Amino acid sequence: MELSSVVIAVAGVAGTLGGALLTQRGSERAKRREIELVRGHDEVRENRALRRACYAELNRDARQFTTALNRHLHVLRERGAHDADGEALEEAKNAHRDRYSEAQMIAPDGVLARAKDVNRALTAVYGQVKRLERGAPEPGETMETAGRAQHEVWALLAAMRAAMREDLGVSRTE
Image 1 (cartoon, rainbow, N blue to C red):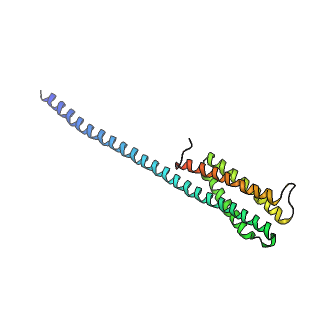
Image 2: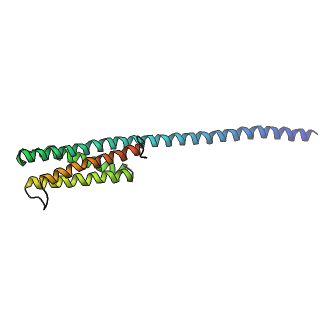
């Protein structure tokens, strides 16, 4: 009978220790999952903040480039190439180029497609403006066609901004 009491006591102690060990391991696993979950949320939040900053700067710089092109065209029409502020236009172009390059590494495909449309249009208008400024336009290029092309960029900017806002969860298309 004493042997069975010892066996029962040993089984009880083993069960108690085993239960504590299993509880501890389960608790450690739960903690690890919780830490991984928090890290995942932090990464998502950091990624969204990075995209938000990139989008805000790209939107601003693309708008400023568009505005600089518009001003440049007005000066070319009214006063000629010698009075145009080429430095302001170059600064706006370079700022946009830098932001677009950053977006190429950060933005998802849907947003990047819209940014690419804007970049192409701005580059095309810039080329027209520079050719007109030099007095060497391509066939069909005039101040009016450059002005129309520059004006059309605004619709592309609106589409890019909408794609950015949707990606950030600010607005949803329906």
